[in-house]
Length: 399
Image 1 (cartoon, one colour):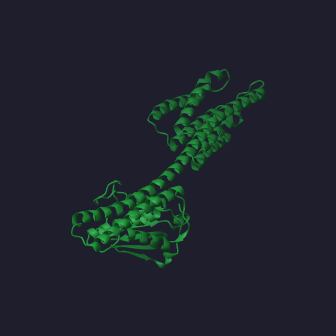
Image 2 (spheres, helix red, strand yellow; image 1 turned 120 degrees about the vertical axis):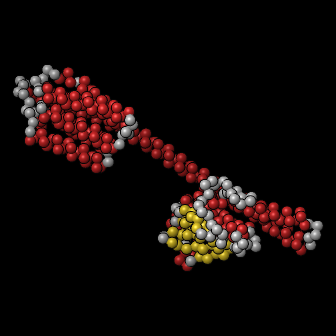
Image 3 (spheres, helix red, strand yellow; image 1 turned 90 degrees about the vertical axis):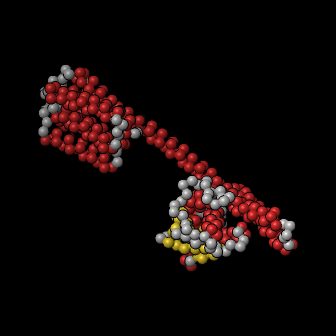
């Protein structure tokens, strides 16, 4: 039960209590001081009405409401027999409400106030006047007290149970949406990786075709054969990227067979060399990280390929000779550091679908950042490159 709904229900119960006062007027009690308690409830409810419209419903406000109810109940009991009054067990109601609305400290504070008020009534209170058939009247009071307590607890209990059921249903629906979205994101990650992997050989093909178009007339047979072989390699890389996407989709992007980290990174390095022939990519793996078990799906390979590709472009723009990938453990995380000799990034791009590179799709860094988050890490720009931080435990389990 939310705090605003609980406070509104408490306010309505106070209005009922105030309206019920005329029904007990025939009893011989000190009504003048006891009426002050009713006036206090009336004033507090009027203040609550204005305060509730301001929209505040913090835990401290709930504690204030319960404290006022305990204080007014103690005041009324002081003038009507104290512990001998059959309605003294109403002190249990605020504690029961606190258990459903407040944390442990709030429940302890509410219980402390109720116990203190009850205890003080033992030391001082005004006795009930002698009435003929007093015991029968006491039994009637006990019955009325039980009826009132049962009604209040049943009312709040049903409201709280309904609210808990609603929250459980929302959590289950959110959990189901999260699982569904995670599957969609996994496939989208693979699709984005495949798109990026396709873009690289297509860009190479575009350059080669432009060269052939411009110089085909004067090209010798050996140079033409070399260009055609390169084109064939890039076409095959495109076919491999599409085929890999289909295989990953059929496997529902699940974990792969466990491999050593060095084997996984070297396989990605070899595949990248087919995509970007002529650009050296150096791989350095620390000894402590070589044998790390890895069962992550193909998105990890796309991360390596995309960041190597971006590093190669940055290195070429800066007049460098290639890109260097160093893998090692740092602070319990696996760090894949891509060094390209370029100026580096001041910050991650604000938009994941924009690229400063000619012909770029803007997917490389976005995909890499998504993969890092998926495996419990992050992508950080550093001087001369980027670093991909990954959780070894999540890489081992593939999720």
